[in-house]
Amino acid sequence: MRKELETLRAEALERIAAARTEDELQEIRVRLFGKKGALTRLMKRLGTLPPEERPRSGELVNEARSRLEAVWEEKSRLWREAALAARLREESIDITLPGTIPPPGRRHPLNMVIADMENIFLGMGFSIAEGPEIETDYYNFEAMNMPPDHPARDMQDSFYISEEFLLRTQTSPVQIRSMEKTCPRLPVKVIAPGKVYRNDDDATHSPMFHQVEGLLVDRGVRMSDLKGVLLHFIREMFGPEREIRLRPSFFPFTEPSAEIDVSCMFCGGAGCRLCKGTGWIEILGAGMVHPQVLRMGGYDAGAVTGFAFGVGVERVAMLKYGIDDMRLLFDNDIRFLRQF
Image (cartoon, rainbow, N blue to C red; front, side, top):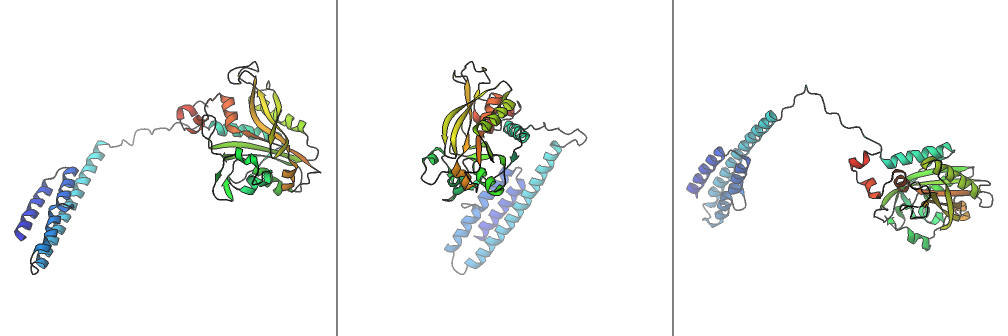
């Protein structure tokens, strides 16, 4: 075995010295030290030697292995350094050249619409309120007049984190939090923009989207006040020629409730493909705050009234900019974003 080991070591040193590429070095490493390599096979043969020869033979094999590994590592280091030096010569940088100016960024259309909506409502005396995106079942549903067995929960396929916590399905919980924070003072006059989450995903729905919730609680608030506020908002957002109409609807947290339609901004109300020939496009939901919601917020439902509304930011952006697929808003395609 000693003669075989000396021959193997001499041949290995010669091959390592002659190697010119990293692939050749890696091939030598596998042939020497791999599971089926020459040194590995010698190590396995130690068990077949007479007991008195095993210690010395094992020592010789280990010495040869250590020597060859050290030579291989040194050769590999020298090759890497030479390759790096060659690459640096080929890719040298002229530091006297002017730098590349990155293209200026632009605001995302959703952020632009949210800013426009905030400015409109701030101009009407509303303030901006915020709430957590990971919400409790109580604030997301129960305080909004949707107890555990309420059928309205079925309309909001929710992402639950635990039995108690979920990703909020609407910005409506900010209504209760704002009333609790303000009570007993009046008025409560806030909007709450933010992200909400539902298990939807298609051309007109996204599992994460944005809403702007509005709430006004005071003495003597009427449905006509709600209509006036929303008409002003719609005309500021889509143009002074726009009109709105209210259709009866149902929401568990408002009574009475209404769907708000806006006269089609593409055909002026004459009827087109986008408004399905009706001249009207549904834009948001609203209504008078349900007495139970007022009580949950700490107010006397017999002394005060209020209105609330919720508008989807993506829907407003799609109508304002003529976008036909909501997914474009989340694709991060710079060609799309450069249009705004």
